[in-house]
Image 1 (cartoon, helix red, strand yellow):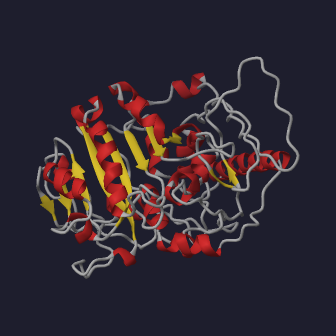
Image 2 (cartoon, one colour; image 1 turned 120 degrees about the vertical axis):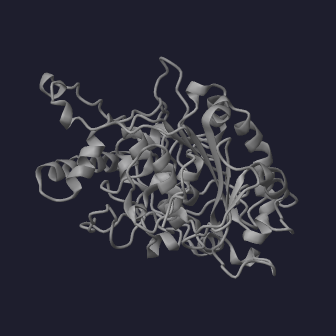
Image 3 (cartoon, helix red, strand yellow; image 1 turned 90 degrees about the horizontal axis):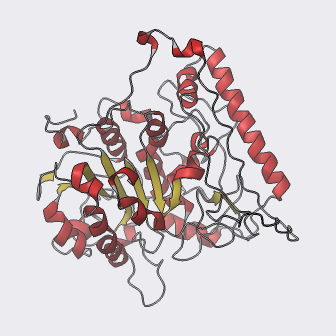
Length: 451
């Protein structure tokens, strides 16, 4: 990550942290703010009413039992996945700063008799998945299109073993070289802004009063999107589809695997070499997921994937998989002597992909998407395409064409639009544009899907 490495060099070590009490107040105020926004939208005449109603259409998700994290200089917040022994006394709070786990959201009220007896015409139609019912997305850093898929590929497992089994979207290009704006676009349809293009060195809120247009696109610049900005994860939850973010190396401040780990709002963070970086975990940038509990419950360490793949009914409908900095393929992020750059990403794929392909969910009705969210220009080869943002994407499924190539123009908006089409969901943000092409129709045996 070129920008991330520069940011790591320039970031200050004096990141502001919060005491447990102040963090608790922050969480409470965030939930109050969310409730106020939703209530205002439902009683007002603005276009945000439909978005707020969609959020209220599902019960808040309670995270798994948590333990309080030990203080750390990382400036992270986020629940830990550990659980204290039953009946144990609470540990004394150490001197200095400490973080408290976010309280579980209150359960949604039971439907009233009047709401149960609504006319059938007012009941929204639930989305229905297509013949593709399990989607797996692996997001990496690209060495360039030719270095990934060309004759001189630096990723032999991807190009030599997987490529013949799947369909290559050779025209897939990024919106920006940095990872975060592409990740954000691929789950929400939000366009890049000045903050996300710089990889959000500060975990900053959007300014108060930032305008949200009719498509749900948030104006201005910021990193932590307001509750009106919905994501694919929100859509899936509302549509009663299970989703998970499986993030490698994600750990709480106690060093143990943790869920939905992110910096404190307004602080900077310097990721450790080869470790977890929130810039590769787009779900932690949306209040719609943070405030309603979905992130705390469903954004989990990668170590949980193997167990979930074991049975059809335990595999989520949508799985987003992000390796740590080393295994993503970003150059210069691995320990000395270990495979680095594209070789590290290729080794990661060679270990993970066979397990996915052998899972009951993939074999029955699955789609694996191996894509790239960033490209470091320094890794471009002499044979690289003149399009500096062309990276390619590979689709593997029994519904795809083995060894086939689709040269149509695709981008992160197309990735989101295609997944939405597969699950019968409405397009979010800029994915609703007439020029955004979907590759879903080809998987469904229909005609070409875009203009």
